[in-house]
Length: 465
Image (tube, rainbow, N blue to C red; front, side):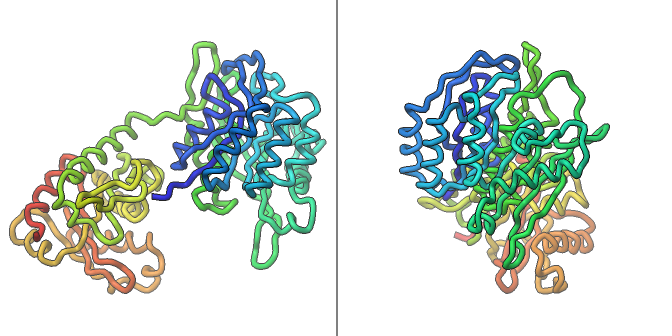
């Protein structure tokens, strides 16, 4: 399976809560394979910074090794310690036509410099025009816009964003390219914090500037959270690598960051970092999918149940209300050497059709957490009706109203609604004979992995050989 990939060019943080380590962890959580090139070794904790050593003499070899072999397009850049590092990075951006998300860090969260004095001016002159998305915090935005952004108005914040975006758009060629600036935590109220995004957006044959405001709940705590900028900019880079437009990537990056920022880890030295680990509840969901996959992957008969669009096993958190609260197998399940074989890892937010089914089902029955899509076999449907106690409902997709047919999520909602109206509840199986452009399908529902496996056992003994 072709997996999305992205690269981080940043400093190494031994606390693993900022820099290259935070970028790698964020890429992975967003479903993107991480490549990494280290610009400097830092000596720091979440609360103190003791210094760094530049790796500019080894940077060229790192970049050539990665970019020379892998088709990487999207890159997140963080710490740039010196002019030599900057020159090498610019050379490779141009050579490989990289799309860059730049987090312009020049001071650590502990207050110490991360680059040689005055390097900001060279970065602004030489790197900014090559950047696709710039993600400064308020202090960095104030420096590069030469405006006072403390206790200021929305007009001044917007002016700062326009000044920064203009620094990315310096000539007629770049003026027609989609680019964006996001001012992180640019404004706040008593209970909300706001990021201000300004995008040079393609609208028809023209590019126009568009402001967008993102809000997140304010969390009260003492001190700083280490590595927030790294996580945010890396998330945006990951979603670009997954095919999102600039606006979509920013919106998804905001959502990812907001969800993670609700969970902070308190370190013994008083530092705070974002918890990027998976919760016990998420681990349980992943383990249930693993249990079902292990059961079917050891059976050649199971391969007969894999449809042309491939099979997926989707499992939701108990109170799931959105796509990224449902896990599935990335790339779905195909057939290799006669056995079912997963194309990728089990991750949250990677399933599509089956995830929409669960979200629709949970509006009627919150106890249903799992669904598998199976190949439609006419003889199998008859056998299941005659020889098992499984409840089976047929839905005629051709009966969908035209306004439902054109939207896939609406189709899933309609399918479940029709089933509930027929049966009064969610059955074990919902199946259909398909329609124009839609493969016939059997959908198996259950509350947990044990229940699904028991149902699969009843199905597998009846699969025609």
